[in-house]
Amino acid sequence: MKHNKDAEISEEEALRRLRMPRETEVFGTVEQLLGASRMLVRCKDEKVRVSRIPGKMRRRIWVREGDIVIVKPWEVQSDVKGDVVWRYTKPQVARLIKQGLI
Image 1 (cartoon, one colour):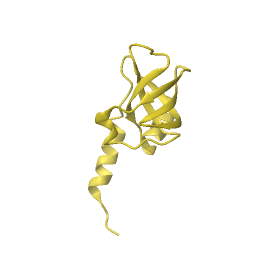
Image 2: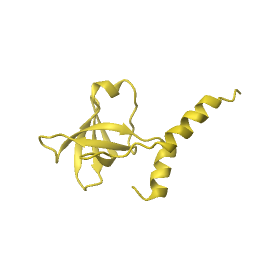
Image 3: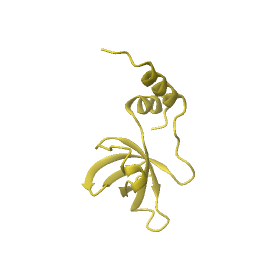
Image 4: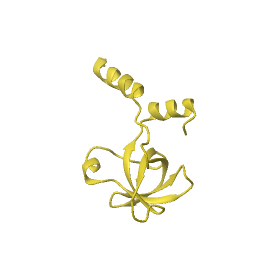
């Protein structure tokens, strides 16, 4: 089995530079997949939002139930709808828990 040093470096780099929620964005946990790139996400602000994956990200990430994501609430209907803007990997989630952010 080959040892891929580049993969290790990129994973370490990702851990060093964790993406944090910006102004209106919140952490969330995917509760249920609804199909058509939509899902129910329980956000840290105690709201459950129907969130979608924008087209630009849809081709790059794969989201499953239980994943930790960053949700950007819509300007209209911000309490019930939003967009998923980031998905964390398992090592990143472990670091967020260790830091007490989620």
